[in-house]
Image 1: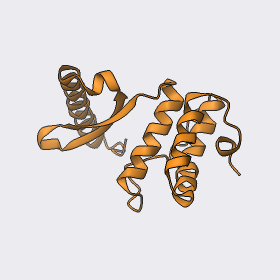
Image 2: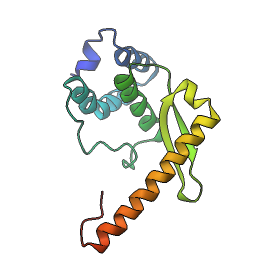
Image 3: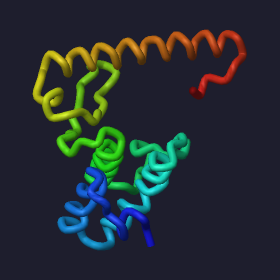
Image 4: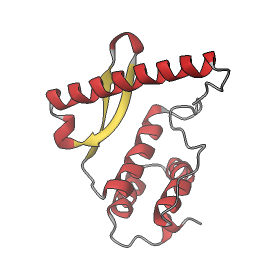
Length: 141
């Protein structure tokens, strides 16, 4: 059994999981717990989460389940229950889904700032990949 399933203690993440448990099919809820438990345990233990936790890489996982997992983790990290997932269009590089608070999600100016930051970050990453490749270093960062 799972600590988060058995012992809610009033933390926002436990409250959020309780709400999800009442809304989701038991099998789906257990699948969600299996997905987020290693990260939640790492947060509780104040250690880095598992490196293999990538919500965007699991082809068999429906987008709704990935979104719920991201929101559960956000509730654990931020202590807030008003987190939302927003999709930000980055133009020719595609779009990304980000978790943010409700105020930011409703602010087009702030979302534009986030998009600019992400575009700058992608540009910097590509420059670093080019430098690494030219230097014969690994480029899979």
